[in-house]
Length: 262
Image 1 (cartoon, rainbow, N blue to C red):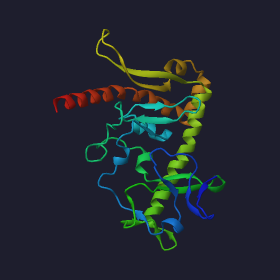
Image 2: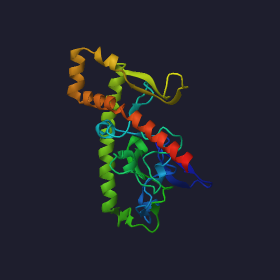
Image 3: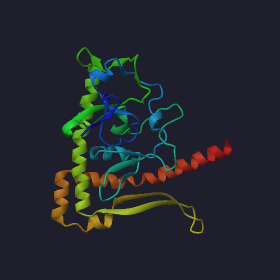
Image 4: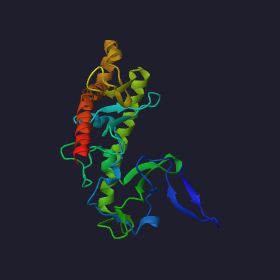
C-alpha cells in the first residue's frame, strides 16, 4: 500500500508510491489535487538524468532490439531481471553524448523513454501514474499540462497508454525470468580486459547470463515449451548480445585515448 507522509497537525503531503524507483528522485502519484497546475516541457538535454548509469531495466520483448547495441544481462538469479548494459565506465553512460542526447541509431529502452512518468503500486495494490517531481521537465509553465479541466490532457493520456503497454510486457518478463530460474539456466559470468596473457586482467563487470551448456542439455520437450511461449527467441537474442561487450570495451579504450590526448 502507498504510504502518505504525515505532517504536524495530522495533515498529509502528496502521495508517495511504494518502494524505491531507479532514477526517480522524488516520485509522486499524479493527482489533480496536487498537480493540477503542473505539466511537462520537453528538455533540450533529455537524457541528462541517465548520463551516469551503467545499466537500464528491460522488459523481455525489448531484448531483440536492445541486443543490437548492448549486452543484455540478468540480475541475481534468485529474482532475475533483464538489463541493458550501457557502460563499462563508472558514472558515465557511453550512449549519452555531451549534449544530453542519446546517441542516434541505438535503441532507447522504454524505461528511459517513459521518464519522468511510470506506473507504481498505490492503495490496494492498484497501479497509479507516477511522476518524478524532481525532473526539470516537470514545471508550472508547461508546454503540455497534465490535466485538461477535470480529465487528463491528451498528452498525459498518451503517456498512460504507453506506460500501460510497458506494464503489460513487464508481467510477461516476470514469467520469462521465473522460467529461467525454474530451469536453473543462469550462471555467474564476468568480463575482463587485458591484451595479452602476461598483462594483468582487469575485471570490468560481473553479471548473470544463460549458460549455453545448460541450454543445450534441455530436453526437446522443454525446448519446445520455451519456443511456444516465445521465450527461446528472448534467450537467443540475449546470447547474441554478448558480442557487444567487445564494442563497449573498444569504446572505453577510445575514451581513455581521447582523455590522454586531450
